[in-house]
Image (cartoon, rainbow, N blue to C red; front, side, top):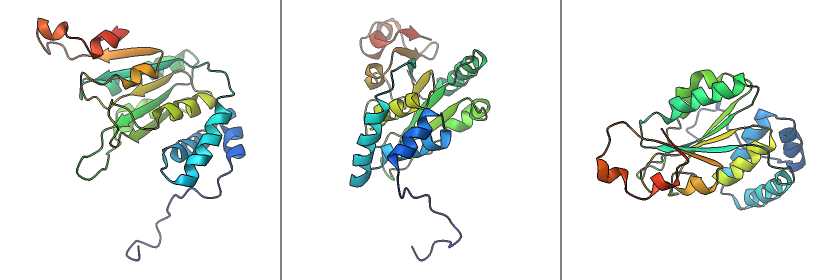
Length: 209
């Protein structure tokens, strides 16, 4: 640690006041939402207890948001579609949120978290929030704490809530159980007739694009 630039400010979660975070979430504070999700994703034992307390409070608020899961192979256009859906929602007076799950390297464990750069117009809106999260070692296309993050986002008043999955393939169905609407994107011309009748993710989808 002694070799680090002394001018670098480390973003630590200290002196956490759950009541304050919850109060700000109810007001739609995006900074508080970011802090809440960072807390939710933390693996520290003391943070897990605080997360449980925060989620318990958030669950007191009635669920009003539409949860939409979007999945498909890498490069099929999930982020592009998400930005257009988000901008459309804003135009209709809604405040959309995007939880974008990025793949993690099996070698380094790191993630690029670059989905936000593909949604540049949506990310600049004060009426939207985009939160990239690493998938880690979790299978199924979502992160370990995606369900809790959805609850926090809903508590902050964002609606609809989009969950963009990693994009691993036919077994990516975990997000189906977390959402109200499940959209599957398929690249045109990918696969033959036999591929089209295979079971798995296709029978879970409510909409196929």
